[in-house]
Length: 377
Image (spheres, rainbow, N blue to C red):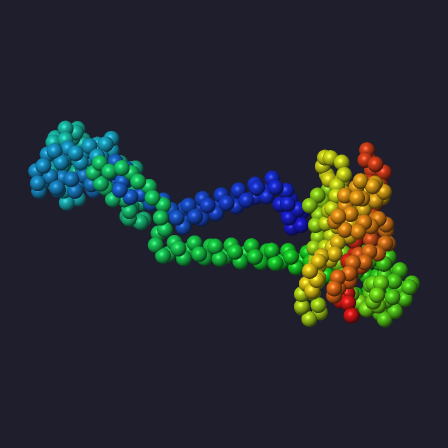
């Protein structure tokens, strides 16, 4: 899942995914189910062959009543090239129509008299279409003499509207649930460990175990829980987070919600890319921003963690000074950020530089930070 999300951060993959999702929703769901195309005001030549035979049957009945030859010729012309096949279908299945009347109509419109005898089975194609029409939905097309074919895409009544609303609701709930799941998973704080975990080291990564041992040596974990001491407090932090940048993560930007044990929202904190060096992919990060937001403070506190090269380059340092106080990245170093009611300690757990043609110690290959937050007493 994480790999998929990383891929989607690339605009190319995001665009392709959006196109495919839109195609699936637009063509099969909306185009075929919710808003299917319905043909209205269709000319007789655009009807199914069995409906063309019905049209011809009604034409003969109309002629028997009004004896209007010009109207009969006009209606025959509306059938176009389908007139002869409709005449054959009607001759094979005359129904209530007198076969002699069919012959008279053929002579009137100067069409070849069908060679099919009354009672003979119609062609296979016509029979299949008739059976399909008997078992399916009735045609919605209305024959209009000389009329143009007008396709119109409309909602098929209240049922289609209900389907549309249902599909939209399901999709909204699915997307919302996925986003909440990813947010909670990404921002899940580091849980406090028990004394048994501290002693055995079970469940810790190598970096965390090294930290526990360091804290045990200084007595910070003497009460049996894993505590992170700030510059002003010996109490365990309200929340702790671990975040790692690795070369190639060009969109690295981790943010975390700070919540009290009661569930009250206190603020947010995070780390993101501040400055890169050189050109080409992947981006070569030479500085990071670590920040702390307090809901009770109008200002977000930011400090810039810089590589050795950036820290000692006057131009880069001066440019980044506007973003926050410069800090040289050194493993084990602790950086303190304070707001009106919060204080956060950013500990550099691990840091390594990349090599190549770039200046020595100018960009990071890996950086691991631990963020611990306390409320100010």
